[in-house]
Structure formats: C-alpha cells, structure tokens
Length: 251
Image 1 (cartoon, rainbow, N blue to C red):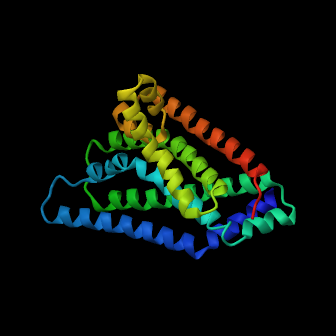
Image 2 (tube, one colour):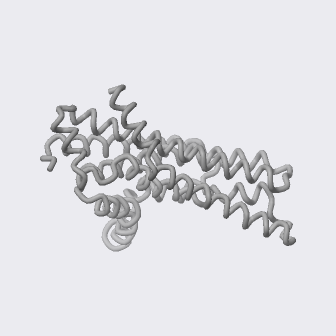
Image 3 (cartoon, rainbow, N blue to C red):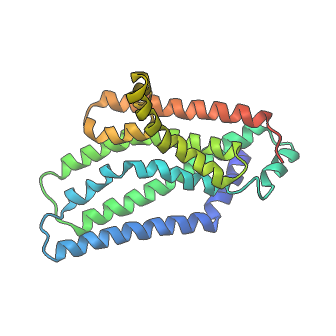
C-alpha cells in the first residue's frame, strides 16, 4: 500500500492538471485580494482584515464542490484511458486501488486548501487595516473551518465513489453534483408536499449543514455533529463504492 500511495501521490502532484488548477485558484484569490485592495484605496473605509477574512465563512460550500476537481485530478478518465483496467489486470487488489486513490485525493484536497487559505488570509493580514475584532473573526473562522472540514471529507468520499462507479468522468461529476446539490432541493419539496421526514433527512446533507454552520457560531455540539455526519458520508460512500467496485467488470 505504501508503494502504491507513493506512486499515486507522485503522479497526482506532478501532473500539469494539478499545477494549472492550483495556479488558477491562486490567481482567483489574487484577483479577489486586488479588488478589495483597490476598493479600500479608493476610499471604502469599511474594507478591513475583519471584513475580508469573513468572506471565507460565506463561501464554505465552494470547498464541497472543489472535491469534484481534486477527485478528477487523481482519477481523471481512468476508464477512458484504460489505466484502471491495467491496474486490475496487473493483479493489484481492488481495495488497494480504491482506498489508495481516495487517500491521495484527500491529500491533494488538503494541500490545495491549505495553499489557498494561506495565500488569502496572509494577503488579508498584510494588505488591510486591523482592529480589535480580529481575534473574534479568527475564532469564528476557526470554528467554521472545524465544522466544514469533515463535511468536505464526506464530499470527497462521495465524489470518488461516483468516479469509480460511473464510466464517464463527466457523468460521474454530474451524478455527484446531483447528490450534493439537487437531492437536498428535492427533499425540501418532498418535505413540504409529502412528509416532514424528508426535511429531516435534508438537514443532514453536507451542503445544508455547511449553509447552517455560520448561523451556529460557537455551538461546538454542532461542530461535533458535522464531524459525525461528514465521517458517516465518507464511510458509507467508501463502503458502497468499494463493494460495488469489487464486483464490477472493469473494461
């Protein structure tokens, strides 16, 4: 397993795809910082470290959908290119293949997230004025990230399950988006029309919990619930994906 992880990490982190995706993300962060900096220097005194850092709390759901990209960096058309078939034909255990790619996708996501957060928060700290509320903002941000992180893990597990079980990477991505974004909306309608149980289930969907997170500031029991739900999504999606992958014929 160690050698497989090393090989997959080397492949993923050296890919042009990974470097370009990270570069685009960093350029996006840079453009956001630049626009805030220009607004501040053009006379908007409301721009500060507090106001810019707080933007991260509003866009927590972006991290959930970013798992589509990090999953694709690792898996990336393996059915189309027959690379997955080659691994299976070579005799590698399917559990090693599945879990290895999942772990590498999690590592890629963690590395990209750390880089983007470091650049954005570092830029905010250097470019904008500070105030007495900086500590409170950082505490709120830490709280939100503590709750968002396990939900992002659950999203990555779901995405990898879809990539392994759907032959087309494009169709797999749409399937994952359907589960993450469309299914909660369907449950909301069903909860209104049929039974409140659908709305109860909807409350445990990762995207819904991420949206509710900023409204539950410093309720650490909710963060604990996020960890429970996120790890359950990760465990269940991995168990289902691995079981189905072991039985399917890889062509």
